[in-house]
Length: 180
Image (cartoon, rainbow, N blue to C red; front, side, top):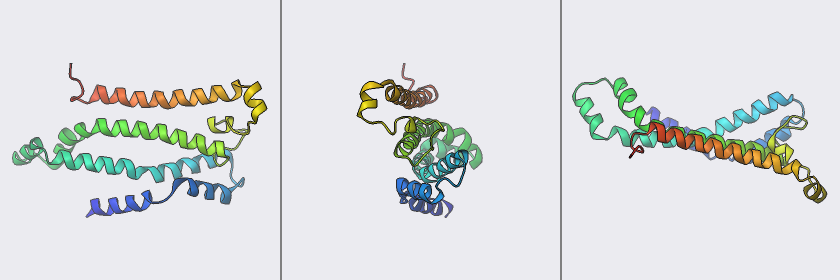
């Protein structure tokens, strides 16, 4: 019952379009709140609207793992459900969760940079990779190339690094991937 309710709530939250919500909030709130509160609001909206994806993946992995033979054997031996969850199911789904969380973090970094680039995120003079890339014309792009190349390269390297860290964590934790 709880599973069904949470998945329906997740579907409702997943149906909310992210970019229009943030743009509407940005216009409604405007410059009435300080920059730190604006950034916290964007992070809360990002977190609220991005949890259903990881919840669906986690639920699917748990449903797959709980039908495996070692879980059935543990139940037949009388092992408590809490121990089955923490000793058998959770270690098997942790690598998948870690990879998806790190990929989600990289995606959220790109969303924030995109929002700031469009002018709906962090407001200058507060630094953000997105607002470092906005308001350039062809003269700035040709003459002052370092003003847009370094923030773009740094953002790309940060996103790629986070993705690679997630992949390395999966390789280190997942017993199935260590086939040496």
